[in-house]
Amino acid sequence: MQELSIKIAIAGRTYPLTIKRDNEELVRKAVKLIEDKIKDYGDNYSVRDKQDLLAMCTLHFVNQFLELDGKKTNLDSETLSNLNRMNDLLDNCLK
Image (cartoon, rainbow, N blue to C red):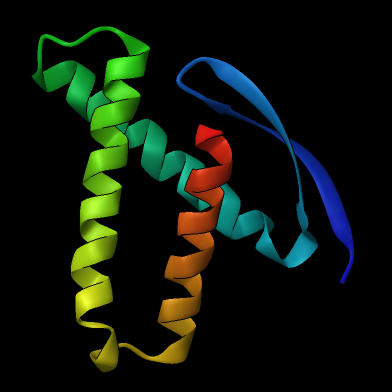
């Protein structure tokens, strides 16, 4: 599978990534979800520090992942695969 070098921006910082070409859409969707959640928390809470917003965002998504992971017997393999890839992408962004 061919790899692709891209740059993504999360919370005002740019991160270079090397990903599988087939994962580009998923990565960009993940970035959009993260950015939207950061904006949502920034607009609705008195938190302005990007690190705090990222921590709140991470807690939100990991909580969702754990809830779904507990129900994974009801999920199809494609959905599980997508959730695992999103979790891996979040892990990479937070390193």
